[in-house]
Image (cartoon, rainbow, N blue to C red):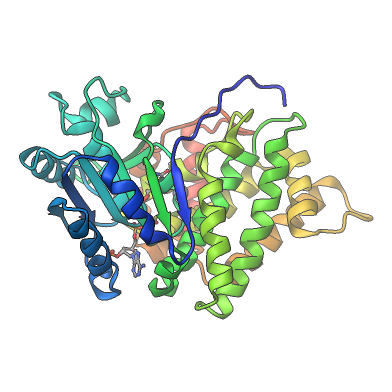
Length: 390
Ligand code: NZQ
Ligand code: ZN
């Protein structure tokens, strides 16, 4: 590993089908005014809401609620939540849901005591909080984003067609704790389950496809990717397979809790393009990534053949005998394509509601990152988008 870095991840994890009980350990550490944050109602149907409320009551908490946090939470919803948290004098924010709810809680956390407009400060100017933040805890119900153990918070501004992620530098923005009960993910619709699977896989790819040095992060990444492939196939055949779902949950957390980015310049272009697609279509995050991935990776492959060959051999067991490096590398992406199709991922932007006339705007909204094997030009993004529409 040739890079210089620091590593600190202060989020405490409670994992397993008994893990919700540990709210009893955590809640007493914070003040009595709690804001419970959740989505459109899945937690009311599957009983998680009742279980959480019971524990909050037993701990004597004074609870206000922010409900109906939508997938791809919007800036208007953020303003509404900040208002509720201020009026409640929130001491603690408890997010119960997927990445959208966890991200949203972090965005509220940095905005409650902020005098400036949070969209402008955190998402347009990418500043760090200069005010007191409110601690966040998380009960995860959807697997994929890694938001339960990172400092990322993605917010969409539908008025300007911008979907922007801010990964805060200060680890105090990371959740203080996260409850990871794989059983909670068993009620996810198949579409959400596989979308989350691809999100995990792509998070690892985004960090793996960068750099040339011999780096421990790459070996960890290959192990995580193999685990995700294995468990996703098992979960796809039998969505009630607890063992497979628990492995996916654990892999998702480690895929994006900063560990495998250590010593890496990291790519993140699939996410940048996918996010801009999301700003135009409001499509499910993991599916936006699935739709643009193969055109992107096939395009940059010549610039990173060595790594794509390693990916083919170490992740997809491609036999290199008698083949050129580029052939081996391309076979790896073919194997990835077969796996994606087996899961039933969306492989085309059309299915997500994107149309030809949106492509220029999507390209304009794509933030160009510098850390991958090829720094893209705007016109190359348009070409990749056109390929993703075919
Ligand atoms: O709203 P409810 O009714 O709860 O339904 C949700 C939602 O419709 C449903 N769901 C969640 N848990 C469920 C369930 N349905 C049944 N049973 C359960 N146990 O699933 C739907 C999707 O939820 P959402 O939270 O939107 O999904 P996800 O976890 O994929 O989060 C997506 C958001 O996270 C951002 C994305 O951009 C997007 O805004 N990301 C955050 C990242 C981070 N913090 O580092 C990184 C990611 O790359 C990503 O960008
Ligand atoms: Zn993602």
